[in-house]
Length: 264
Image (cartoon, rainbow, N blue to C red; front, top):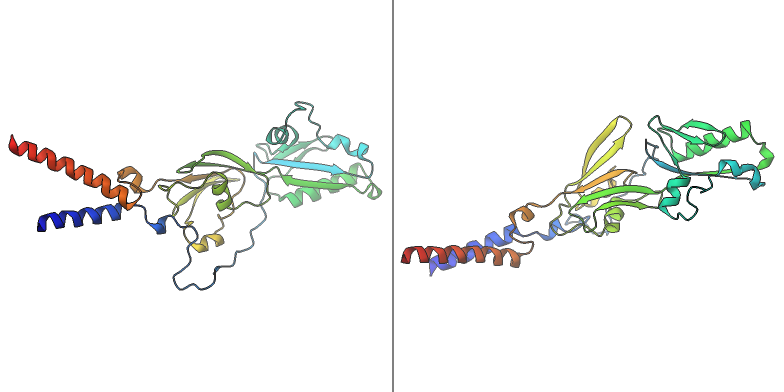
């Protein structure tokens, strides 16, 4: 009787320790003493500086639209293209040398500049070489969406693009169907591109102070990796009941095999 109780207690302990806990599943957890719903103030993010392979959307407007038509791309390559395809044909890609090519203006160095600095540079060049102040030219320069790739323990892995100027990692994850139960939310890996190469960063999404992390907001061409929890490789289940059922089945099979061996 005592042996049976001990075995059942051991099974219960193993099953509970092997299942995924609530703390591992809950995002942006506050400290136990917290009273307010938000205990952190988000730091102002530095403006994004353009990198190689970024796709820019640039448009020029003026009182006389015909005079600025040459600077605005016309989708002759594929007039039926929409959405991301249209951006691919009409946008300006930053090449390996950090330049973009604009009709009449030629190659412009944009590597390391913000979109606002790019806008000011193009506007100054147009006023210097092509237009007068009376033309009232209006230049807009934006990132053509924020593209990211997410792999691992996520419902919908793959590459996605969000047409926003600023996107948090929580929005990127939600856009990809959320992290699975066996995904590690405490150690999300971000591979980020820099002028001198790529760097690997980590962020714990179960802590409220993750909102203050410099990696809370994603950047174009980020690679987000969601690694599996140990419970997935062990295969004992994600809930206490699943773990208990799995371990009980194993113990039952071992006990049956032992009894059969003894009888022989």
